[in-house]
Image (cartoon, rainbow, N blue to C red; front, side):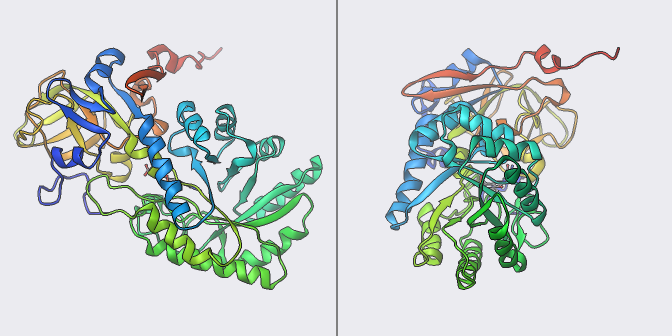
Length: 442
Ligand code: LLP
């Protein structure tokens, strides 16, 4: 991660023109302002209010197609399981289901949502370091395609449950390859010290043990080394270790039919060079092409991140002896990524007039009562007045799904843009709805 990525650096930061030019689904119209797939974002803000998430369905479909084409282009037959955690809205899940994707889930809730969105159980993989007994029972009851087991303890628990119900779980062992993905430490998952996966050195013994356990059918291996990965070298290193394990397991007479290559492919939020799906396909091919394994993968962010924007209104611009503060009606409770990972998101005005005339640097904040509620620092923005609508870019992944009602702020509305018009796919939460589940003590 770049040091202080929140902070603007005119030497490396893209202009508003550059940001928009790099995202063909966004375009300025001189009169209607910023368009998402031809639909004016100003109209969405006027109709649905702010803050509101807006998603381009066509961008999601196009990204799925180009990822799938990259795999086919490398002569790989890969089943894509959308990582539901990146954006679990039913509209999004059913879009990917219809496009042919399966789902990678990490909770009973995600499993139920994926099923509800019409994704076949056989195409669901369940990952995660702490699946509860109830969640494992649900996975068995739904007869999902694969459970990625992350520890010896979990393997024993699953075996006991499956044997008790007379079922057989198709299990992949998620192996920790001890590879540093070189991304933000909070989203790096493949180092030996991370909580994820089975230690590399234990994998063969545990696989052999799994093959002898009641209720368990080991079918392969899985790995996932982190998220927002911007280099292919860590993938190559991890895949080569996993390929080595496949060979070693087979040398031990064990049956291995599938490898789950995980997710993590990064996207350019600022203007970082990011690997392409074709590059990832080449890394997968290099490691696995002569192993005769069925490959799956679990991309999340790459498919949905660029397809979403968060619309916000300027509440006021607070002048100070330092940089002015642009106070938006969207905050860290809506989009937590800047506060949590120092993540950089493009922020552009929706109005076209003056969009390219930048004023001095400003700090963009939300109304939440923490200094961490900072969406951008020292950002060059056009002169803004209260009521101006802003679009926070690349908010389609790990955006609304990570929202909270902190400061008793209701969850924002969510809007779907498709075939030239928009519709609401998630109502703005009513203020009272946020405390509906509460009771005064007796
Ligand atoms: N598979 C597994 C087992 C995962 O844990 C994840 C993400 C993925 C697939 C999908 O990774 P992706 O392709 O989306 O990078 N909230 C953070 C990201 C957390 C990622 C967690 N695991 C953020 O906003 O950057």
